[in-house]
Length: 287
Image (tube, rainbow, N blue to C red; front, side, top):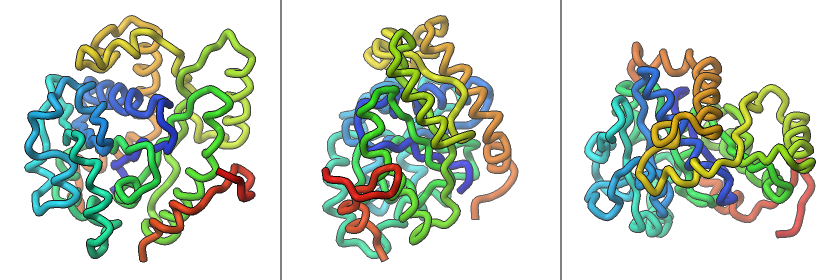
């Protein structure tokens, strides 16, 4: 499962879906076979790729809670080499159904085993929460990718996110690794942006991607046209940054992506995760 990546941050509005969509598009344009699985009930990744949310009978909700295969839920997008498992508002009810199922944390991993050899990269666009859907995504993944907004408040809650990652790695999936941190929404005119970038790099070291994504009007506009920004306006600053990030992504994980093209894929921590609050230094903090 080393070529499966969870784009995860429990805070909303940090560029998680934008990053997943645009990196996926860049990889698809490079000839890689990419599957994006929308695991957020808002369905932003779905609409951002021009797929109508309410017209889909088989979505990530059915993938998680019903007896359907992953292959049945996959839809082609207008971009060659890029497919999607869409999501809509029905996914908001998945947590309630999952809670009573046996081996509930491993459902997505088992479903994906049947199709991962058909793709070079599988991206999971996680919901902005620490529930069972996110735990399923992390357990199914080889890597976690953390998009992080270049603002002070974006650092709050990062410790809890890392604690979640460590718990999943320790108790559910020892293979899960921190794949990288994407710095997003950077406003280089402010000292705060530079300070956040410096602090994050000091903490995560080489795990931070070199490319920093700037604030960009085109990045915000593109989803309303149902296109990744790198397709909607490839010449914008934001799009060019994501192209550079996609190339960096390929360089970092090309082994994981190539492997899938040639080889076949062969005690719940939910309560502990939901009740934990830890800052970067490991100290308990108030909510």
